[in-house]
Image (cartoon, rainbow, N blue to C red; front, top):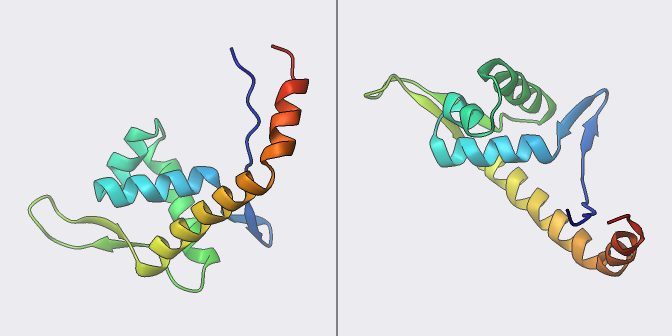
Length: 115
């Protein structure tokens, strides 16, 4: 197994993690599937856990990042709001910039790990 060093950004609002890697993964899956249930399933997470993560994000940001859709042939679903899409986009951009800026140090740390 090849050792790996990862950058993991978390943004806190008081005691809550407003956004972090797991929440971004969840938002991306909600965007892809249109459903908290399907997103949770794809991440091997319970619906309750996914719902609690969404609820925390919606409370931490000025406006909701995920909204429910009523009706439709399957009884509705969920979608990312414009703010939710912006949060994902900015988070991924920060990750990419940080990884690039720290690439030399990440490579050095990786070489220091036991193989």
